[in-house]
Image (spheres, one colour):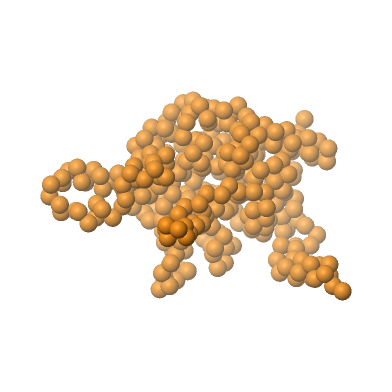
Length: 341
C-alpha cells in the first residue's frame, strides 16, 4: 500500500488533500464530514479585517451613543448585516474564535486559522486569540489590490513584511501566507517572507473579479468557481521555487481531480488545497480523489508522496527552461505551425 502521508507547517498529515478556507468550515458537522471523506486538514473560513474593525466601531458607537462624535467614522463601513450578499459571511471575531474552539474539540485533523486583511490593526490581537483557541497554524490571507500610482512596489512589499514580523513576534504556531501572483520578483519576495518568519507559502490567492450591471449601472460581485485549467499558474511557480525557498508550499486554485493533486506534488507542493470541487461535486468527492491518487501511484510504482514530491520541479526536470521563457517561445512556435499553409 502506498504511503500518502506528508508534512505541512510542521504538521504530520495523513495525505496531501486539505480543505482551503471557505464557508464549508462554518459548521462543525460539515468539517466532520470532510474528515470522514479523508481530508487531512482544514483551513477555517477567514476572519476579515473589516469584521474586526466593524466590531470595534460598533462597540465604540454603543459607548458613545448620542454624542455623534464619531458619526463619520461609524458610517464609513457599511452595516454588514444590512447587505444580504454579506450576511452569510458576517460572523464577528468573537464568534470566529468560539467556532474555532468547537472545531478543535470535534475533529482530530489539524485546524488552521485564517486572517484576511492588509494592515496590522487588530490582526496581532486576533492572531494571538486564534492561537489560544487551539489553532494548529495560522494562514494570513493578504488580499490587497493596490490602486494608488504613488505607492511603489517596494512600499507594498515592506508593508507585508512588517505585518508578518509583527504577527510572528506575537504567536508561536506556524504561519503560512497566501499570496497573489502579482509581484515583480516573486522569488525574492518569497525569500524575504521566509526570513521574516513565514513557514509556508500558499499559491495563489484567487481574486474574485466584479462585473458590471448594464441595466442598473452598478458594480456587482461575481463568484465563479475554479476549474483545473487554473492549476497551471501556481503549478509553474511552485516548480520554480521548490528547493530554492526554505518553506512548505501549498497549491490552491484548480485542485479538482487526483491528477491535479499528483501534478501539484510533483511540482513540489506539500499539500493541495481545494474548496470549489467540494462545492461542485460534494464533500465525498474528496474520497474519490484520494482513491485516484493511490491507484495512480500503485500503477506507476510510487511508494510514497515523499518520493514523488518535487520530482518534476525545475531543479529536477531534464529541461528546466520549460518553466521559463523557452516554454513561451516553444508554445507559440508550435501553435503557428499548426496553421501554417
